[in-house]
Length: 444
Image (cartoon, rainbow, N blue to C red; front, side, top):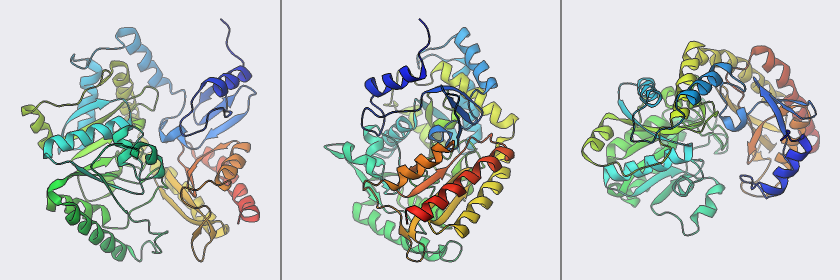
């Protein structure tokens, strides 16, 4: 059977696919090939993938070293059930524990970030004998039932219809929207936020709380950077009340922010690390939970009541090994910091130049523009969780010019593959400048 045309692919997608977070029947770009940071459609239009798809193809498209590892494992042995030991799974587990550091001991493998968070929640409840899970309003942890209920953004609402119990939200700080100035008001912002959280912990009953689940750097909700001392304060509160700290590294992990994991920017160590996305460059689904020595020892004496048919999937783990090796061999963390200087400098220029850009936040190659109607009042360009045409229009203008980004609420996020070159950044970033000029003239 011959290959489908671009038009046929688009029509079949429109007519037969239920697409995530979308009404059915929408058109999508039919992708003919992908290479490096670029996608190409069937009409030979070229797009720079400046969001790494869903912030997951950290090492770009068509990466030959990773693909060769996938092919080799597929020829050797593509699958073995979780109760069997395999070369790929054993190697990857040790590599991940070594990357996490001396406090960590074992890995439970999953298939996605949502499953990773779901199972970390279950483990926390088993280990502590407590039920409540604290998480942030400004957060996203996945779309399964538990992960959705832990998420703070509006995508949780459908899961809350008779959904899971024991989930408690707290408001994490957003310095810009809360009226603070970064580098000036950090101590005040941190003190206020931690005081409110401790009060909430007391009202909810500390002996009822199993864990605090947080993204090390809030990702999909706007790359929100915590004020100085805040994350360390969370760790202190957890220690004070015997609460486990689960750090969601699904987006921020695997060198997206420079170091291996986002939490390594702070003076703390979590009890569990959840991961997915960048561990396999998204070529094969894989996620997991890395647990510390104490939790590991608990499950030496107690049965782990977590199970997945594809836990430690052989083919996925082989790809994971290839990716971890690639990150180290090509010194991706150091390269990210070099590219960060270019991206951050450009973003700061955009804040100075454009009335519609209130703030730019960048850590590694993880960044977001805060789009506003009024810089003086910090009024956001769009209202939280209300339909708008502004953000789709901005993304549409960028796409017309061959620049693929993503957004939520009033944010435009730029998170390119970590392999992006200086020349590619310098070629494509001016497109953002052009589109923001259009925003200034049209949308505010």
